[in-house]
Amino acid sequence: MVVGDRGDIQFVNQTLADMFGYSLEELLGKPVEILLPEQHLAAHRRHVENYARRPEPRPMGAGRDLEGVSKDGRRFPVEIGLQPAQTYSGWIVVATLIDITKRKAIEERLRKHEERLEELVAERTWELREAQREKERVLEHLIQAEKMTAVGTLVSGIGHEINNPLYVVLATAEALTDEEDLARCRAYGHEILKQAKDIAETVKNLSQYAQPGARHDLQRVDINASIAGAVRLARRALRDDRIEIKTTTSPAPDILAKPEEIRQVVFNIIRNAIQAIADKGLIEIHTAQEGDWVAVRIQDTGAGIPNEHLKRVFDPFFTTKGPDEGEGLGLYIVHQIVTRYRGTIDVENPAGGGARFVIRFPIADQKNAEEERP
Image (tube, rainbow, N blue to C red; front, side, top):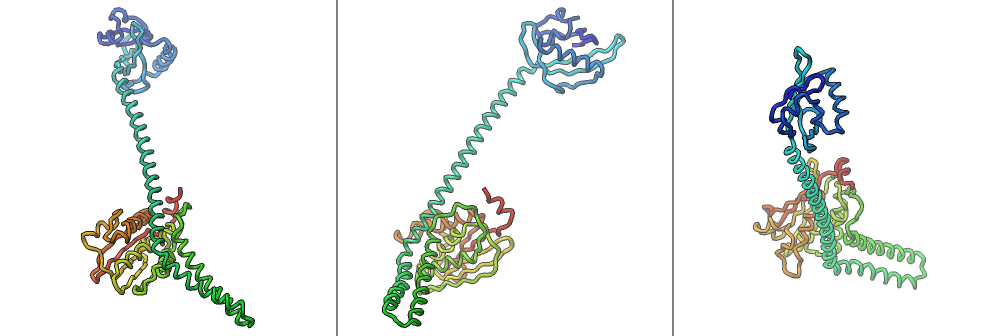
């Protein structure tokens, strides 16, 4: 339609007339406000006055959405494009109107679909987070269960380690009660103290291994100290004189982990190695820094792992041992702990025989320390 500078409709085509339910005669000469809802009239007059002072083209789709009202009072959304023109009798504005009812309906359906999709994504995200939390809870239980299974196999060795010094303590204490020589009393006292410290160290090593995973934040861990603790426990508890455990360490940066779980990783692999060695043998442990990683290599002189089993040794419940020698969770737990700390673990059969496990942990730095904070 064409609107004069006074806001009167000077021309209108049949399509627009049909859109609003009027005949051409009913619209010609009428104020353009006849096509607008009553509550918009005051605002529209201000827009007209402002536009008249500075008329300029307004492309279709520019500006805000507007509403039209048909002859029967039905309101519907419209999009308007404006093109001013100068004539001999003054300014006119050519207005192009489109009924966008269908487009708005589609947009509303899309909006509802988007809202529903966002709800579904939120629900699925919550479900995945809950599943991850449940996985973590199950893993914590498995780690602790594997620890206690290992502790069960250590009882006889630990008993021997405690009973030997305990017998010395008892015998020395009996001698002390009848001893009158002060110098010998002091010597007996020193011997009792030494044996008591040995007992305390043995119990400490076992309790550190058996305790549940700490709930505190991860901490910087000296990998060499954790290995030394695991080796001490293995030597005292597994007590197999046929097998030598040799450790070669070099200075290495800290890693970010829980120290009791790093000890568990090393102890589980040592225990597996001892079980794989039929006669006399050697278990070698090496640590070194490799770029941004701390690497731990544990190699034994046992029978090795059949090549067809190499890819399955970290699967849960996979074992080649007898029914009384394990449930196939030891190496699975090792793998879960290592990957939890963003590390990697590989196993291979070296040319000289036996098996070699290579574990790599990322070096602790300020960035990954902050990422691990809750």
